[in-house]
Image (cartoon, rainbow, N blue to C red; front, side, top):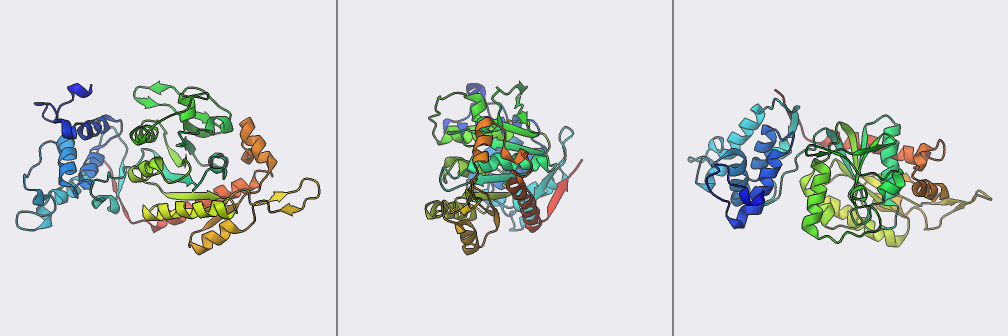
Length: 383
């Protein structure tokens, strides 16, 4: 298919230098639900880089109306109202699609991104994207993600869970389901368990076979999980990130409108040192921090009911205060949490024992609503 792909006019083969970019834009335009407004917004976001802009514009909308790159931002007489950018904004406000529901284009999306950076197009039907990350492995990030998603569903919200930890996909085991997803047309159908829609690399590559992938392949699978899966209407899509601050995190953050991020840590200084790096990463890429979760905060002795601070105590709350972010929850080091994860029955489903995770879900909802109110006004595009 790639060899047969031609430019918008269909008259000549694409030159090798920009072939891959043009091909990716062409594939994006063939995706279901990609409205005229989304196409225009995509082109608008590329205005800061004339080469990338010309590629996106030509594949999506045809030849550029002006050859002068200066006309991207101003008219021939210096008036911005005659520029391509101004015309695109005007066309966005009037664009509609018969086959797709109305989409919201924020004022922020109508300004250019950094040169060469792709605009963050919304995921159809998904209201809030919640990224759950950590600076290091072994802090219980996936356990928090699983119980948070199931907790949100238990509270009556439409929830989904995307396992972006492609190197260590543990969501299938913790959710007690391991089937191969079906595909209808070009859309992958997520699995459903405990009222949560699921997608994980563990469903597609079961067993102990490792994935040895580099950055481009990781980027591709993350985009496939985000935009190639039929998530339907969701209030919250929880994304379980891999540990650290690498390719998967950057791919997700740069291309998807993340509502906010949760950073998971333990109270130990070793974990907190890496948690601070994760917080700084989210700050640097301008993703709001919903809060810090201190996992394995304490252990209640089953014999004498005495509280034992196995990994110290209070480090998560103290770090959140120092870095001026919210503190969401203290989660206990409870053997029942481990049993729930190994058996595929998350502890949040148990009355009483799952209350700390339900409280985390409630606090996450409250923080998400608070962050959403801080965002700029939206222009709704309807038919």
